[in-house]
Image 1 (cartoon, rainbow, N blue to C red):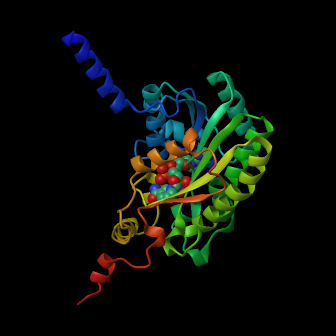
Image 2 (cartoon, rainbow, N blue to C red):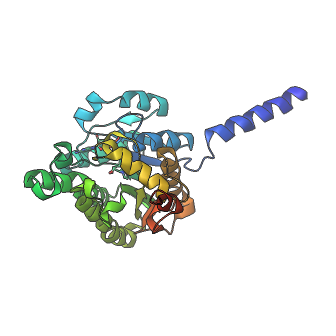
Image 3 (cartoon, rainbow, N blue to C red):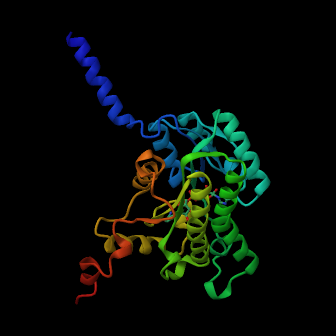
Amino acid sequence: MLWDRFKDYLCQNLKNTMGHDLLKGKKGIIFGALDEKSIAWKVALKAHEEGAQFVLTNTALALRMGTINQLAEACKATVIPSDVTIVEELETLFTESTKALGGKLDFVLHSVGMSPNLRKKRPYNDLNYDFFLKTLDISGISLHKVLQTALKQDAINEWGSVVALTYIASQRVFPDYGDMAQAKAVLESIVKSFGYQYGIAKKVRVNSVSQSPTYTTAGSGVGGFDAFYDYAEKMSPLGNATAEECANYCISLFSDYTRKVTMQNLFHDGGFSFTGISSAVMDSFKG
Ligand code: NAI
C-alpha cells in the first residue's frame, strides 16, 4: 500500500519534470540546431519532452561542424541534411521526413539566420551585394521556400503550425544588425502573406517570434553583442527572455492551445518592444 503510494508519487514527479504531453502524437521538422546554445536545440529538447517526434535538419557543413548527433540521440530524432535556400533539398527533406515519421507534419520551426556581410564585418554603408542577396535568401526568402515546398507536397496537417524566429531590428534601427534587418523584414512579411494563403488552403498557421538578444553563434556574431544584450536587459521590465523561455513559447505555438493564432509577429522579449525608456536606463544618465 505504502509502496503503491510511493510509486504514484514518483510517477507524478517524473511527469512534472518530463512535460505535459502538449505535443503528444505530433510530428515536425526543426531547422537550425547547431550546438547546445542554439534556440532550435532548446526547442528540440522541449518538443521531445512534450511527446513530439521530429526530424532535425541543417546544412551538411553544419552537421559536420556541430554536435547535432548528440541531440538526435537524446531526442530519438532522425537527422536529414538540407540547405534551406535550395528548393530541391527542401523537397527531399519534406518527402523523407514524412516517410521517416510515418505521416504528415504538425509543426515546423524555422530557426535559421546568417549574413555573410556581418560575418565579414562589412559596415552597412559598404555592403557587398552578392552577400546581401545571400543574407536575404538564407534568412528571409528561405521561409517562403519552406512554406511553398510544404504546401505543394501537402505535407502539413490541418491546424499545423509553422514558427520562424526573428528580431525587432526588422522594425526599428539597431545599427549593428546590418543587412539582417532587411532579411527579418522580408521574413515577417512572408509570415503575413503566406500565413493568409496557408490558412485559406489548409488551415495551417504561420507566425514569427521576435526574441530578445540571446547568446548563440548567430547572436554573438552581431557587433557589440555584450553591450546590446545588457542594454536590452535594462530596457525590459521582465528582463531578456532566455533561449529556454523562447523554446517554451514555441511549444505553446505548436500546441493545440493556439489554434487561431496566425500571421502574427509575436514579441517574446520581456516587454522590450513596448518600453520607451526604463528607469534603469534613465538612472544610468543621472549624474
Ligand atoms: P544559431 O547560430 O545557433 O542558429 C542559426 C542556424 O542557422 C544554424 O544552425 C545554422 O547552421 C543555420 N543555417 C545557416 N545557414 C543555413 C542554410 N543555408 N540552411 C540551413 N540552415 C542554415 O543561432 P540562433 O540564435 O539559435 O538563431 C536562430 C534564429 O533565431 C535565427 O533566425 C536568428 O536570427 C534568430 N534570433 C536570434 C537572436 C539572438 O540574439 N541569438 C535574437 C532574435 C532572433
